[in-house]
Length: 64
Image (tube, rainbow, N blue to C red; front, side):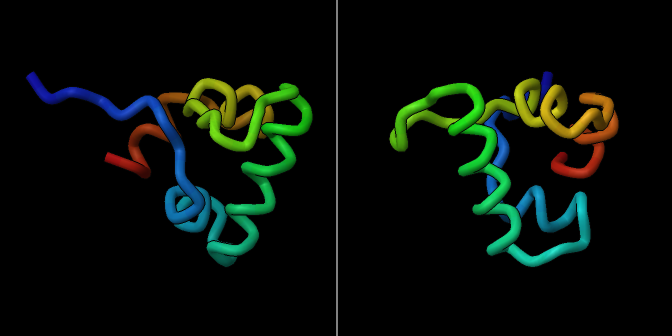
């Protein structure tokens, strides 16, 4: 059984959106601000999915 990742990184967002890695970092920062997370806390794929409206299964296909 292959374990699935639960955290999303800027490089993943770059692959999904086709935008720059810097854009991915900015998006993660915005998600953290909206969810009132501290800088050291990570953003999950579920949170990214909810924020962007992109189906979680589709996101997981891109990052596997």
